[in-house]
Image 1 (spheres, rainbow, N blue to C red):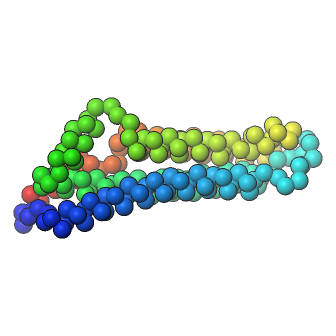
Image 2 (cartoon, helix red, strand yellow):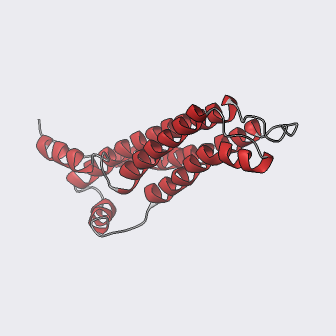
Image 3 (cartoon, rainbow, N blue to C red):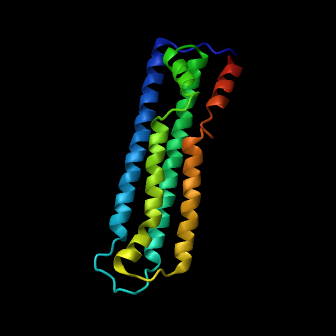
Length: 187
């Protein structure tokens, strides 16, 4: 069955869907900043700890949990990007949007867009979350114990940064080419 192309009503619906996805991605980024703020408030001691005492597991666990939640939010944001590319690929394939064709051509050269800007936010928040226990150690003159917590946090922070960088800056997984090919195959 060949693609019939969108009707005027379909174009309005697709436009609304695209706008909603862009808005949801922005909200997820804003939510990530909020989560980071909550984590920071949660991990800062209400009563200053005794100098030279152990830092303890709690700050490391909160940092790890924060990076996990941030990773999940970024993954959801990336899934929305894939959905966005499916819609835009459809509009390109059916020749229903000159803007989408131009935007596709524009993206062939290096550029800075929503995805990269949002990825920068996540690239800043994750390492800041990971470094919070180390800042607490310095601020309160605490012992960096347990060492396993510190090492786990550092390893997970490296994995987090690589994950965000690969998805946010390399167009890997955006599925744009696959979406275009699939729509072309249906055409």
